Length: 118
View 1: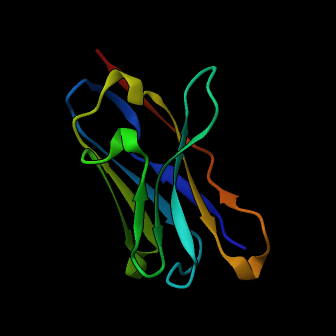
View 2: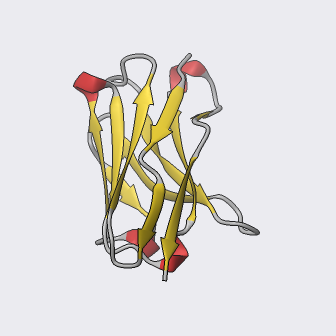
């Protein structure tokens, strides 16, 4: 139903910032939820942030006050602004989306690596 492509990852020093982008292959205005998960080596995938079609947001406690998720419906893109990055934010970040009308599953991007040096 949709392809998601992430970009914006890279290497940054602790305290720095990065902005991740997730470009969708179709209009996102009526996609129920979009967001970001991350997975560090040896750890389970965890939800970082999500945003609904109505603009409601949800954040993991570990990133509240540092990360901001937003969606640009005109450009079919979801962003994750990451400030005050910490070493423990190092992970592969995956964009996902969910639309109830498409069924129970989620759609995922291929992931983008974020590495924070201490």
